[in-house]
Length: 117
Length: 119
Image (cartoon, rainbow over all chains, first blue to last red; front, side):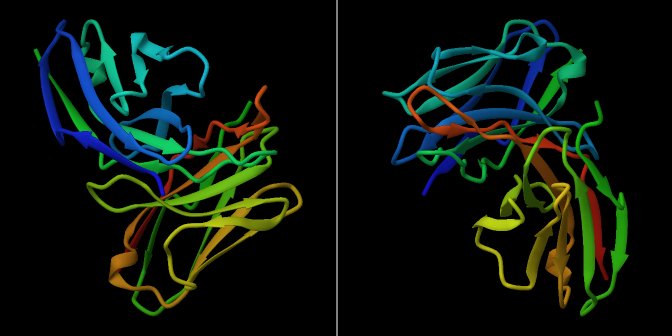
């Protein structure tokens, strides 16, 4: 079974500073990895995904994440934080079935990102 | 192009009652997954429907059941509601793409959710 650990339930950064949200995964087979963002009282919006192509994945709103197999990590970064980035961020993992079909997503508990003015 | 839609937005029920939540997938998607998100937690996978059959199920009791219709829309039914069933219920739709290695991958697009409160 897969699992995801997000380090830090709350992360606070100043506006304009680097954002780093940590995610470590566990999977017995090569995983697919995702980062989603959730604003209050809304559904989840996909930021980016890793599906075994390039290890550095670029997403929307200048977010990017790097897949590091040796560290089983998929940390999310953004060079310069904006006030609008304040939200809940979820890392998720799934596995693929040969010949088609994909696993349900397994999510971490989330990291609440706070942007200080 | 409409995204994933869910109805109703909010719902209040009492313990022991039954509830049905509905989901319409994004255009072109054939797979629907349901998740339960308790307050302050990450979403938990309930089950996934493909070709009108339950393809995969998470660790949820049989009180949770579902259905997928020929137009790919889906329903989530919960019987004998408990206080602990209070949560945001998220529907996600996807379309599996087979990559060069023969593995399937999908990107799940989420709806806005249905907030269920059980009193």
